[in-house]
Length: 388
Image (spheres, rainbow, N blue to C red):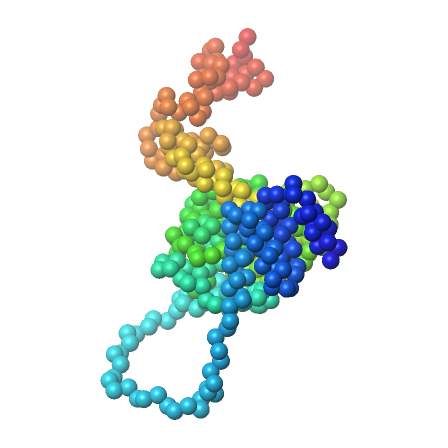
């Protein structure tokens, strides 16, 4: 109540505009129960930041929840007249092969233990209507990653175009993995970017989705906020935001969660069922408490990746970067120096175009062997002779 009062006082200042005013109005809308007041705060948030997709998404969900539910049938089930018997014999159904168990121990044609209507979202208010599905567009939130070097893991959609967020620990140095959707359907996934320093990887699947999970509007998670990590296999781990004296970067948040549900990539929700980040395999040096990556940091890296891919780049599985080597005529990643996969079986030789990436022509040549490999303590790294 005190926080809401202070926010209302702050909103009286006309200089508070843009995204800051929108977040404040959105927070106030979530704290009031009166429909008229909630609608007024939502309208003000939209007016302050009309291009924010999260605000539009929440307004649409709230408006949908205000729709009247369909009337219940007036006649009790099982008491009415029997339906007329069919006049024609239905065509025989083709034989169905038995389901094949997946890496999660479930049949490929059976839905996983966790779904969008499962226990993890039981406390989330229902919208009251089923979202319209476009042909070829799925309604998925959390998926499984199969075929990784450290066992099955979890991922979740971060864009509606089919981009998934998971951990680097799940995909390792692979370029291709298998993605299992909530319906049990398995589709190929391609690793397109990873950040080992954050234990983050982005995987692309040709499966657009109709909507994403609601994301927290707060830039930081309040202290002692209850948290819940969800795995694709149906397991959940509960904890809270852990108070620490360490100075952490804004993209990290410490938790009291110690249970490793799978290989990683579990979405983390707060007590309002908003997505706040992803649980990584990074733990404290003195305790088994795990760290998470904030959802805002993940979304910023997704936007950076989209900008990077405006140029012709290819993924380097060794370091996780996207290399310009293919476009510049080179064979090695300019970030880590690893040989790119497309150049593995090619006859490699010097190309002047590669100097744009590697700057080999700008190095000082050895006076003895003319190599430009570099020097260490005055010795050539190619011939080992002193430069005196």
